[in-house]
Image 1 (cartoon, rainbow, N blue to C red):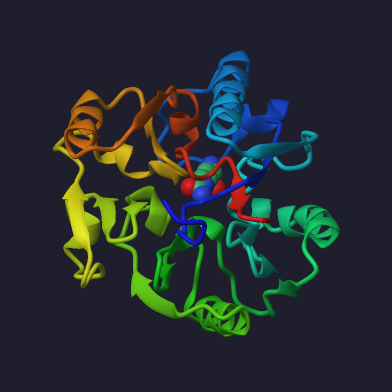
Image 2 (image 1 turned 60 degrees about the vertical axis):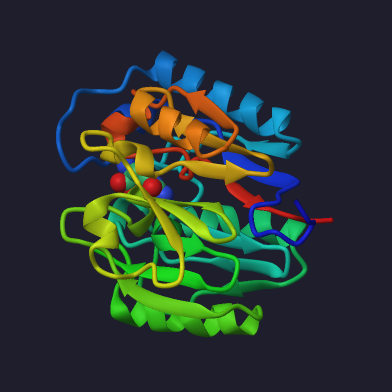
Length: 264
Ligand code: CIR
C-alpha cells in the first residue's frame, strides 16, 4: 500500500455517544438502542481504529444533539483540508457549528459549505480518482453543487449521483474496498453509478453490511453479516468484524462514527 492511497489514514476524530442517542433519528422503529451497548460498540470501534495504526481524538459527548456521535455527517476531511457541511436533518444542523472549531485547530485549510443547500458527509464516497456526492433526503441539488465547488478548491474531482429512494445516505449502501473496488447493494449499483469500478455485491439479506470501512490494511465489517465477511475474506481482504446491532437501530454503520484523514 503506498502512502497516497485514499484509504490510508493516520488520524481520526470520533465523538463519545450522548445519552440522547436512544432518541436518535431512525427511519423504521427497530427498537430503542441500549446506551451501555452503544458505548461498548463505540469503544470497540475506537480500539479497532487504534489497532489499525490511527491516532484517535475522542471529542466529548454533546447532549444537545442526539445523533452527534455520527461525526461523519457534519464534516468532510482530506489531507488537503476540511469542509464544514450543512447537515440536512433539522435536529442535526447545529452539529456543524460544534465541529467547525475542532477542524480549525487541526487543518490549516477549512472551507464552509455555503448556504442555502444541505449536504451530509454520509452521502460522500471518496474514491481514488473522484469524490461521489449522492443526492438524498439529506443532500439536495443546491448543496451538492456548492459542495462540488468546495471539493474542486481542494483539488478533488466531484461527481454527483443519485441515492435510491428509502436509502438514508448514499454510503448507507456502499463503501470503498480498494483503489478499484467498491462494496455495494444491488439496488444502489443498479443506478449505474460505479462505472469503471469492480463491484462486490452484498449477499441477499445482508444489505446492511454495505456500510463497511476500509482503513489502511483492513476492512471493518458489521459482525452480524457472516456471508459478507466470508465473501470479503475469500476475495483476499483482511476483515475486522465489529458489532453494530445497537447503532443499526438508529440507521448507522461503520463509516458514520469517524472522520478520517492522512495528516503526514
Ligand atoms: C441520522 O439519521 O442522521 C442518524 N440516526 C444516523 C446517521 C448515520 N450516518 C451516516 O451514515 N453517515
